[in-house]
Length: 572
Image 1 (cartoon, rainbow, N blue to C red):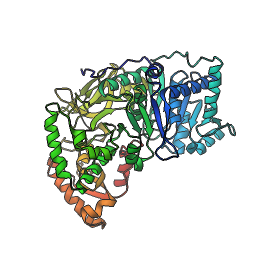
Image 2: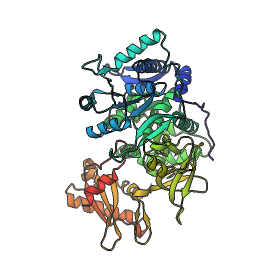
Image 3: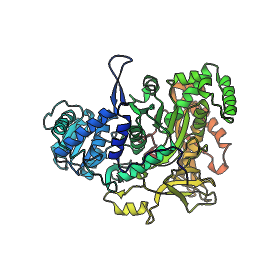
Image 4: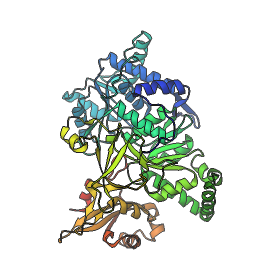
């Protein structure tokens, strides 16, 4: 079993985490915001954040919401985090909703979760007004994050905080003194997918705190770190690793203004750490290397990498000095990237590490709170997701001749089950407590885990050979000028599959790279590059047909390809 490499206090519940970390880091900034004055920033300290949480939590209980379910939906913002903790740290069960869902699905989840209050930003005014008018849900309180005062029966979060503050001053201590049952559901999270398919995952304080301990004992973060929050907060990966973890360590959080602003935000906020999906880091790495090449410094950088890698072997690290210009272009303080949610291109991982930015790959599921395994400075193997966390056991079920089978995990961060769905719970968690991840993987002799792909997406050929689409997509995505790709099997008359690939090219660079923008010629040029990829893999894996487009693939809010949706666009 993996040994922890960093010391981290163990918390019984999230309330205890807030109290103890607040005592240690109260004066440190928890959140950093831009002001209207250029170059000037506003900060909210950890003590102020916790005070706001206590005020809102006190108001929630006063409004009769003790032990009730409360939903939250908005873009990433300070008020979201405040609601999350005001609910879980003494009020009831928090239900974060996906901000990208269409109206009908938001309504459906409000009904399914049986929430009695919902906090939301002005972007969701229309859908909330409709839910309110229908009067077919349990919702008694609609609370706006943006209203200054109660208007037309819609409450104001700002007013509730003010009210809670007055109640606290008058000695109301129900929220402050609340006892937490760490074994019960404290968080209800819906898995991605259509409303009919999505399942409600029940997580406890024990689940989250166990995962928090594992993350902290593996990946070092402290009060000097500044995180850029980019992925949606309703998603467990961002929520646990990019929100709760930084708050527990006294770090600061700044909110990204959108994908086009990432580079600027990293510089402006002097970001040190970022948790995101592989495609973001891969694109960032491509841009860094392209910039180096344009400046005619590629050979110099390559030589620098050779020298620095040699010196690292004898304990001398000169990477930040040697590649200072690159670091300065990235804000000067970046030191840590953690990728999760999909396979990370080993080239990007290796490249950032060589340049002096620690790049780790992690793996997990909503059902595991979410992280099951991750790399760190001690446990790292290129192409792997590292080793299982200290508190997690893993094994491969029914491995084939290559050692590949379904990855199973067991430990204190595994969910309580799916809400109101005993059948799905039994299918997913065995009697012995093993979570069936649905991912195919192999584990080497030293315990490093290598993910092959989703079990339900594997293409099984007539000869029994398995094709893992994600593996081929990683190779195709390395072709210069290719933005992303989608590999699938087209069923033939003989009952076998033809391996096909839908390729998204970078419109802005296509002419420069391929010498044309004319679709048929462009397809010919890209096909030549795909054939080169084919030569590097076994013949049974060859891509036999391609289609090209400049339109992005259909993805979830965490940038995973919606494969069932995409397959409809290519197979009629």
